[in-house]
Length: 629
Image (cartoon, rainbow, N blue to C red):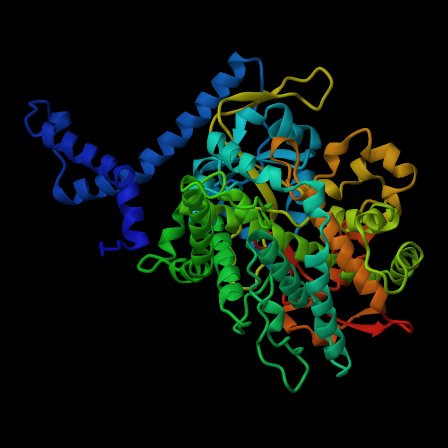
């Protein structure tokens, strides 16, 4: 076994040239001056030499920053362009912005970060310098379209993103770029056919088990953490769909609410990663690995300073691999056995691959690639769907008139007990509108966390940004008629905030902050969305658009139909929430119109890991329908 070098030591080795070169230059020049006969070049004494060597590090950093800024201005001028406006911050390294963001994250609301910048600058696209690096942040659909579609080849995840994602996602499709991304995409695409994604047997089995557990707990007169329950449902369904191995998370005990005598921290949700365990430790480890990845994102390449002597990812990712690797190895073994049988002249009856993993092993038998792809698809197939369903139920609890209308459509199109089929779901326009409106206000897929520094890494909220990195210098057109284009330097991180774009009144109308599914059915659809489809990106867009989009729609629609066939009332149980999960009192001091934010009407705290979820769970009670299934 080789010697394992602590992350902090590797960090110092990596950055040692930047730290040691300036002092060595000063020392060398001072030594050379000792042989000079010019009095002005007399060598420094030891105390002064030590001070000069120490001061050389920030001096060199300052010169490097100044030179980079000057070079960008010269290049922009040469191309007839201008630089984007800067978020005002006189503090070194953007420390002031980090401090303001910390306060906003602890007691504020996710959309306020860029809204505050908009008030200061008047633009939803700006440059902010964090830890001495440019971040071109945007919530503008035209610029997002450039990155995701029209200049797709000019933007990528970037080397830093790939490095930070590597421990969890490896070289999988979410973290890969270039030819490797194309390879992963080509492996996965053939499996997501209509026949595959509309095969509802898996959904039905796990939905029935989940709703039975829900009903059993509710009959005790106890609130249920719907986020926990639905996270188990989507995990069991995803693991069975992906590799035919159900981890049986639904077999575990549901957590009791905070205000119940039997309360024990059993919740291991898609958001909190509690102390409890299901039938395996996989879920807890999977969530913990995501939380560590999110924490590392906030500190970028400097995260090893937080884990100087111990790699916190080693233990949870080991548990994840412990479950996945034997399954992957078995799939490869079966493929090799089929090949060996064929070479021996025996002909086996051809069977269609039943799982995505069986499909993948026909493309490669590289265990690392297969494992990475499965983990990537688990993040997509479990967490994003669970997050959206959680917020759908939250909205139904807050809008009983929407629940009533949705249930009427379900009973009309499907009935009180019939299993929904693909054609049923396709015909349910209001159901799709409810899901879309939820994803507009609470888009689940956010695979990049920005730069907030917060005190509590377990329970803090993060900003809703995805990210690209410019491969080469490029120009973005001005938003002003006749204005000069904006110069985007090469290797610049360009975070984009879909959730903020989804709530812009100039893009969605004066009622953009309201939850109203009819906006996807009435004249507003033709006025706002159809002329500019890039204002709605719950599944990303362009060549990297989510392959499982229709699979996710089908799974969410199926579960909601089954849920509302069985229950006809949903109530949010605030008293059951952990105190840290409740909204701050300051949020309700202004109306939604006064604050320009949904925080005035929120009853839960949205939180970002790799996906959006509810902090400490969504605790609800439900009433079983008079004529249940």
